[in-house]
Length: 283
Image (cartoon, rainbow, N blue to C red):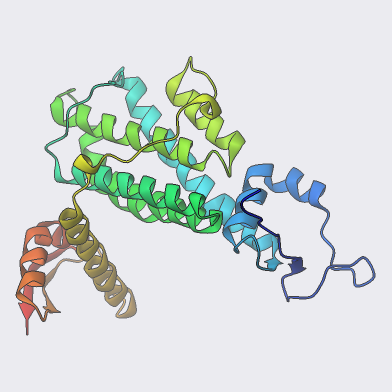
């Protein structure tokens, strides 16, 4: 053999060794029956490096079930609801979309493929699982789908709407493949539902990143938009000013000229997201 990975101990949530005498042992079969095998496995793999000790907490599995699998399931449901209404048929040789959000999420997706492949190759499945979680929750669901909803709601099936469908389909099918080593049942269910009739996801080739579809500058700009929007929304919450109430302007401190240029390019997204009329960059 060339490599050995030794597992750490599974401890209770307080870091104590599990034992029947202490009454802190967890029955794995009742846990799997309650939360499912994939959620249990994902929590145990994502929560710590394989060789580190794992503090096992039932609340952690419930959070994984809600935050990852629940979010991904809802995103899939959103896609199928409108795709079935419009009789959307995914294309194998789809051309690159002209929409900025489509190009951004596609770039982030291929960056994710690189990250997951690298982490799994380095025997760090916890890092791979966490990268998938961030992509699904922060990028795919809470940014791309939310900002693109109106495109799916349009009455006519035009090129823009078709591009949105194709982009979301590509993201979902790729996530099914990337997550399948850790969540084999859910990954297979998602892949087959999107690709029926098809063989198992475990018989498909693992995704390979396409450098031509990656745009690091666009990723950086959109990350700035996400960060600034998040900060403004947190300020609104802190001062109890609801998002539906429009504000005249926000002041954003910026040090470099390059950063100013990046923010200017995504200003329209920020203003729409936080319901503010003007964004002013200050020294």
